[in-house]
Length: 574
Ligand SMILES: Cc1cc2nc3c(=O)[nH]c(=O)nc-3n(C[C@H](O)[C@H](O)[C@H](O)COP(=O)(O)OP(=O)(O)OC[C@H]3O[C@@H](n4cnc5c(N)ncnc54)[C@H](O)[C@@H]3O)c2cc1C
Ligand SMILES: *[C@@H]1O[C@H](CO)[C@@H](O)[C@H](O)[C@H]1NC(C)=O
Ligand SMILES: *[C@@H]1O[C@H](CO)[C@@H](O)[C@H](O)[C@H]1NC(C)=O
Ligand SMILES: *[C@@H]1O[C@H](CO)[C@@H](O)[C@H](O)[C@H]1NC(C)=O
Ligand SMILES: *[C@@H]1O[C@H](CO)[C@@H](O)[C@H](O)[C@H]1NC(C)=O
Ligand SMILES: *[C@@H]1O[C@H](CO)[C@@H](O)[C@H](O)[C@H]1NC(C)=O
Ligand SMILES: *[C@@H]1O[C@H](CO)[C@@H](O)[C@H](O)[C@H]1NC(C)=O
Ligand SMILES: *[C@@H]1O[C@H](CO)[C@@H](O)[C@H](O)[C@H]1NC(C)=O
Ligand SMILES: *[C@@H]1O[C@H](CO)[C@@H](O)[C@H](O)[C@H]1NC(C)=O
Ligand SMILES: *[C@@H]1O[C@H](CO)[C@@H](O)[C@H](O)[C@H]1NC(C)=O
Ligand SMILES: *[C@@H]1O[C@H](CO)[C@@H](O)[C@H](O)[C@H]1NC(C)=O
Image (cartoon, rainbow, N blue to C red; front, side, top):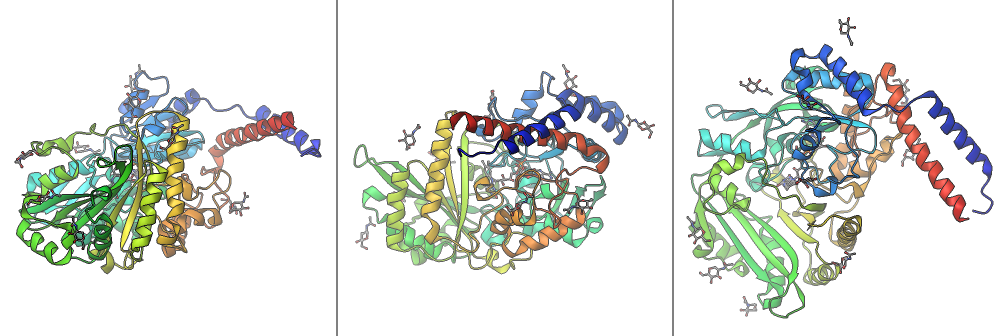
């Protein structure tokens, strides 16, 4: 470092001065003014424009922003904030918002339910605005034809409730948490406890409505097979703003059965044997049965001051208790399932049970949008393709205790998941996968030190698991968003960069997604930290030539500031 030449330095400062001199950074106020003016000209209902655009200075800005933040990590004062939030009320508002964000040349983040684990629907390190779809929550259920039209900002709980209102023998296969949004969940794959019988949400989508980069509203016919394929698991945010999906309802029995069985390593309950047997049974058994396995490091009740591993099976059986007790007696003796351990109920009550409501809760609790506790979260994912051995599990138990708080959720595949081909949708993790692992750590206190501690824990466990999980690629689930596996960078977003995370999420389907992306959004307007890159790659301003320059210079200015700052610091220390 001692022979650091002053030349690049001078050059940088020259560049910096040059950029600073030629452009003033856009303020939130100027973006608000231009956006409002543009939107007034580009939506049908001009009179409500001032009611749906929230400036930073607006007294309700923070509460609108916070209403759909579901991870407290991205709810701090230092979290970058949007320059404005637009909350469309009708389709033409969405069209206008896309056209105007594009013409101003600002990054547009799209939010529906806000459950993204890395907050990328409402955070960015570049100047950005949010289009928040929470007012798009209409759900139209047609039992006769067994379909429903579901707007992007509806929650899964609302979807289940509206189906149940019309029919007690229909449901929809999607996630377990009722406040998750349709827009992100369905476009990201979307799985729940009926996946072994009915597949993913995306296996049950028959049409969609999207606003594309030109501000056009397209349905399946209008967008064509390719784009329709891409938004069923490839992540909507790389391609446009999804307005609604038309989904196929599935039939559910009048009576379903749930059970929860807990074993603990310190209690001599043959817990390791139990997990070994779970691996043999859960991915291969009757496809009406979904048995999630939770593995958590907990304080031992047997040896005070020590930690142990708790294994919990949580199950949904699409049938009666007698049948599943008989089945488990044959296939899974270490489960020790009796009829007393089972509860028979309606499908909608099983939705409430899975969401941990107590058994006096009525279905209208599913309409509550504010039930999530505001924990700090980190998630990661993996796929397991061959059973983990006894020795393997014993090593994992030791590591989990050593690492601290991070737990696992094993979600069994098989059944319908193995019948759908790996290129039928962008979601590629089909036959050959026994189960998906979610790495899960929650904590309750703010602070960067704690955050670093807990995210490091999750990464340590992830690293330890390498020999037990898929490789080449080491696969991951898009809806378990994890920025550790790669991100694109400003000014690049090349194919090579996108492939680092893209191949993990989409395996061999990545190239088709890139092709479609290049065709429908060649200038890469719809972009985020893990979006699908275009083939050409380097054009990331995302804006039309006319309006883009101001903001891209602004961002460049930031990068330079950071670089120069770093060099100055370096210089001070050498
Ligand atoms: C508590 C909790 C429980 C979960 N349980 C499950 C589960 O059981 N099964 C499962 O599969 N996943 C689950 N997830 C993950 C969840 O499915 C994903 O985070 C999903 O993307 C959330 O969708 P959203 O609309 O709520 O999120 P958002 O944060 O609003 O969006 C997520 C992503 O989708 C994009 N997006 C959102 N809306 C649109 C739109 N209208 N058009 C285009 N792009 C859009 C966003 O820009 C972002 O990239 C869970 C997450 C949490 C926090
Ligand atoms: C709005 O549109 C009208 C007619 O198309 C045009 O004359 C006017 O300049 C536009 N205003 C703005 C602010 O874009
Ligand atoms: C805040 O924004 C909303 C939506 O645009 C608007 O209706 C309201 O008048 C604004 N309030 C203030 C104090 O600016
Ligand atoms: C975000 O912070 C506000 C207070 O600043 C709090 O009221 C809200 O509950 C928090 N939400 C989440 C999800 O952390
Ligand atoms: C929802 O449905 C109502 C009643 O049909 C309609 O007035 C409203 O415009 C719809 N909202 C959206 C966002 O489509
Ligand atoms: C299952 O039921 C039996 C009684 O039939 C009981 O002894 C056992 O503890 C129950 N198991 C669980 C996990 O609840
Ligand atoms: C554990 O397994 C052993 C040997 O298979 C068996 O004898 C014992 O009863 C089991 N213990 C429990 C609690 O199931
Ligand atoms: C609800 O749960 C309580 C306590 O867990 C139990 O005593 C009661 O029998 C349950 N009621 C129903 C209707 O299942
Ligand atoms: C980090 O986590 C470990 C394990 O849970 C804990 O022992 C330690 O105190 C934590 N450190 C901080 C700074 O929180
Ligand atoms: C973009 O990223 C790729 C992959 O990391 C790298 O090879 C390439 O040099 C980068 N290009 C630019 C212009 O930064
Ligand atoms: C960037 O876009 C322009 C015009 O849209 C195109 O001419 C150029 O080839 C693109 N650059 C790259 C590296 O793809």
